[in-house]
Image (cartoon, rainbow, N blue to C red; front, side, top):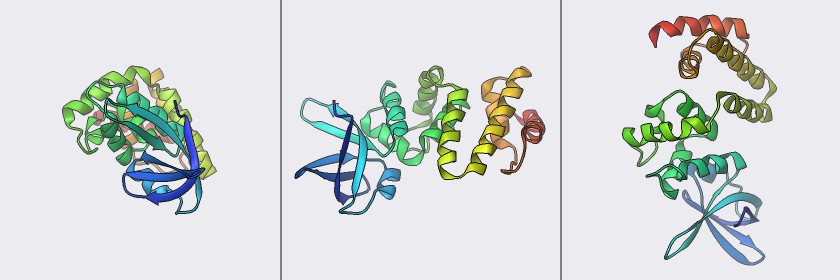
Length: 205
């Protein structure tokens, strides 16, 4: 098992990167999102990898974050979703977006990925929903936002508290998440304001 590959970028395309590691070139398939964020040629990078072993080949699939790799492992465990289809999903959705899409039964968003139809998206949601939790999804979202800017993390925390309040009122996690997602929110809103706006959205679910 190769947990990660760290080396010098030799070549980057929309689907793969070649890293020079002690004069050995590793070809790693990557998502479209990671291709855009990949450092330039000659720069060093670490890519977290999954090795796919087939009868006629061994392939490395890689990601710039361990979080994306974890979601990738969950995706390929879904019956009918292969390594490249899973990579396609993570090319159009971040790990955070995918978690929230699954938890809110948003098959339409998942079906935007290449090669993923509505039927497969619904199956994916069915198989992954029990493996994800709303609390973990928000915790990871806040961690990622904190890396970008603090105010955003506060907004995410307020949303999480509002959803918890809605579930305490008897609404399902899915409905609570949908209501908050559809509400017209700004980053400076506190939990009480978000909760009031989300309750108004409940009438339209």
